[in-house]
Each structure stands twice: as structure tokens, then as C-alpha cells.
Amino acid sequence: MSRIAAYSRYTGKPALAELIDRLPRVREALAAHDSATELLRTTTMPSGTIAGRIGAVVANGELTEEVLGEIASMNSAAVNLESKMNVLKEIQAYSARVVESEIESSSIVLFEGLDAKLKELVEDTRPHVEHLSGVLSATDAIERGQESIDAWRNMTTALSAYSEIRAAQDVLMSNFAHDHRARCKPGIADLPAAASDAIMSNLDELWPGWRGTDPATGRPISRDMISRNRLSPTPWPDEPVSQLAWLLEHGTLWVPTKEQLDELWKERRQRDFEVAQELKRSPEQRTKRAQMPGFWQSDPITGEPIIR
Image: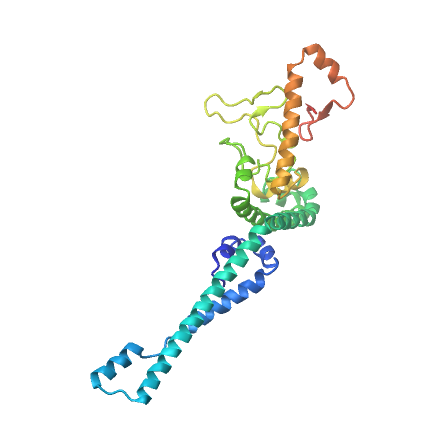
């Protein structure tokens, strides 16, 4: 296994390792690095030292052409061996720089590769969702019958692959989109992991008050007076398998690039601005605008009207 730090940092996540190994020059650079590492490991210094041989000459007081030739040969061999070892170390360092450079310059490719993996998983798993409607546990699935049992089993397998993709995404964002990663999730203590712009692009539609503000009124959402927990629960279940089934059915799941997140936030700011402007209007003005075609749309989960 390669000991290149930049490589090991990312390839601890299987979903990411596969993508990195496909990058140009990475496989060859890793092979060169590993070959140099192995040669360094197996290279041994010759027994005896030049200093020891010279010391023997001085102690004996005898120096012949033959002895001089032996010492010169030892010196040449030592210099040659040191030179080879320096070259091997330079190959290691150069290979590491190539790998790190390829990974850094290909970050968008890696984000897009993970997104493609996610979309493939969604496509393969979505047919099982219809058999898990209302199923919140393995017990529920058993009670529903064999189709739900099979669907639950397949969804459990999909959850493992889904978690691997999200773990790989987190590594990428931590290294190449740190600021965006922080902005994807407001600093609200009671937000679950799935409530993030990095997880789905339609979170505002599925859970309008997830950012802590009621979009219909522009005011903070209702919270418990004592615990300060939000009173409106998440639209998805807490159980991981049933949660994934819900997200597959309703969410637009993605692994976004920084540019895609920037576009999402630009559109959100525009909507927030329009809502704020609407809330400033008089009741008469709002009533008149609400009668315009297409002004109101229904929330996809609750059916409640929301401003567009």
C-alpha cells in the first residue's frame, strides 16, 4: 500500500478511492512510489566501513596498491549506493507531488464522480420505495409481507452504499470546499444530519422552516418554551432505513460542486428577497397579488400554500 499522505487522506473512503485511482497519472505515480519504497527497504549498506579499513592500515603501518584499490572500490561503492538512495527518495517525493497535484486539480471531477455514483444508487434503489410507504421499522416490513421484507433488505444494503458516498463527500468538502461545507447547514443545534444543502437541492420545498424561519411570515419558527426544540418535526422519519426510503421518494439528492451550491444560494436569496418584499405590502395588495395565476403553489408534503 502506498504511503503517500495525500493519497491515504482520501482513499480511506472506498467510494473516493475508486475515483482517485482513475485520475490521469495517479496509478503510474503510485506504482513508481511503491517501487522506490520497496527498493529503499531492501537496500542494505555493505558490511565494513571505509573508516574501519583505513584504521586497519594505520594500525598496521602497511599500505599496498592492492589495499589502496580495495579502499577506493569501497569508497566508490558507498558513493554510488548513496546516490541511488537519494534518487529513490527523490522519486518518492516527486510521485507524491504528482498524486497530490492530480487530486487537487481534479476536485470537481471527484465531486461529479460521487454525484454520478449517488444517482446510480438512487436509480437502482428507487423501485423498492413503493413497498416501504408507511414502513418505519423492520417489524413493520415483516407485517406488510414479503415484498416489503425484500424492499427493506435491499434498502438496508443501499443505506450502506449511501453512507459511504456521504462519508467520501464529507472528506472532499472538508479539503476542497470547507467554507461551503459550513454554509450548507445553519448553526442550529436541533437540525438532523439530512437537513443540509449538501444532501439535497430541494430542502426548502420539503421543509420550509428548516433554516429556523417561517417563510410565510418571516418570523422565527415556533419552539418549546423550555427545551427550545422546534415544534415542527422533520418531514422524514428518524429510523435510517426508512429515512433513506423517504429521501429517495421526495428528495432531490445530490453531491454538489461549489458552483452548484453558489447557484442554489443565489436563487434562495432571490426568493427570500421576494418574500420579504411581499410581507411589506398591505393586506389589500397581498390579496390582489394572491389572486394572480401561479402566485401560490402547494407545499409538496403538507399541501399548504406557499409563496413563490
